[in-house]
Length: 356
Image (cartoon, rainbow, N blue to C red):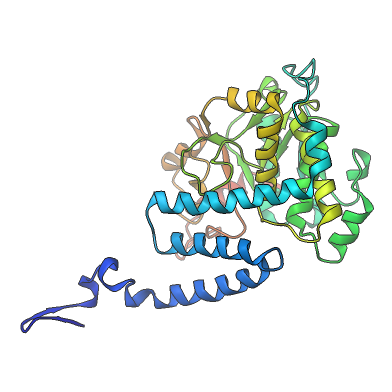
């Protein structure tokens, strides 16, 4: 309780964050954040204490719901530090590609449909969510999806031994191996790469699959994320000669030759940003995409465990969004409600029949 003068008493629930700093019922939330942030700070100090502070300041501003201007300022401070760090670690690749000439066939589509995904241990060892997403891609593209694995990727490209060694030693996370495989396969073969948790809801044409460059996009002026939603790393497609792909591959090769730790979980976004800055045709092609597509791509993940309703579910299978980003970390995934009614997730699995 908080007392105001002699007679007026305010309940804690009446006190806003401006007066109290936080509501008492959120103590557990703040304590969890503190423990998580402390662990991340120590880990980021392995890169730099300055970098660790930049990350911590940004996370705290987000937690406390600071103004957009303050959050964007802190985000750009972190982003610029990371960009400079990567540039310092990858000077040879950046100079080799800087201001390179535009490839002759830059705007030509791929000559055939190639759809790729990845599951390091092999598709037979994948979980239901991955199998459901890949099945949806096969049904709606009308083509096989080649799943890259630790056993077959050498049929298409090589990963340097020093990277494989560092991965085995636990220095390079599987997420960053996946990023490398994404850009490596597109640089080697071209085609359409769909991430392990991307669910397809509508049929697409071969012309779409053979596009010269494509990614999900919803450009924003907010600067919290490096990409500002100009691209996403979980879904990219294009001509194999589009220099973004070989640049990102070579940059990752050089980075991991010089480093034992990723500077950011979404490091690939920073590398794409560097390509955007130093290769004129990359900037031109990315900027030529429509400002937005698949705008509702993040909405389905939070409705997976809702009761399935045919009419209501059509909002995901009709309209302008046909690629949905799901997640292992977020969104409950139950096949039936507490009273036994089929959920959206249960329905999506049933579409796969006995294929999973």
